[in-house]
Image (tube, rainbow, N blue to C red; front, side, top):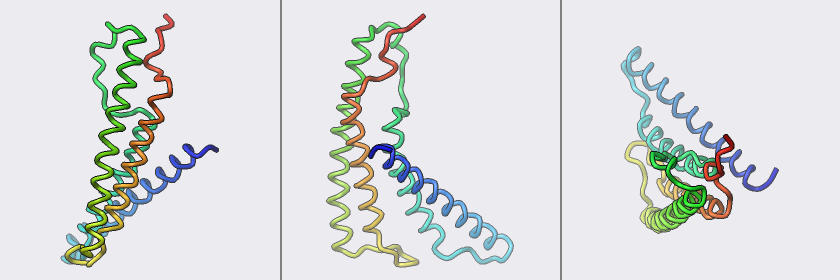
Length: 160
């Protein structure tokens, strides 16, 4: 198993675990709210933080598999060379954009850690979540950098 596959397995496992925890917390919160008139304290905060981690852990997986939303209306009119160029240009734009956002998020994480920001109810620190977001978006950026040099299967000539 190479490094990319290991990273994808780890991120997939983290995303699945976070989703399971969010589902469990929501179930406990709903049962507590409707049957016992006592919602789970801080359930919303944990779900909110989990959603951020889930989205940012899934982003590198989507990038690696090239499963982003694509509008391919004009692809039938393009040559394989043009498709290849546009796919590489798209990966370059994604790399630059995600790397920039990752840098800004990392700066934000440092500031959040310095201020000691926490959630309102449970007083959980927010810095680890923001650091996770910045690292995983950086990984997604690196995925796009690698994809610039990997042949895109849609750019291959039709075999019909």
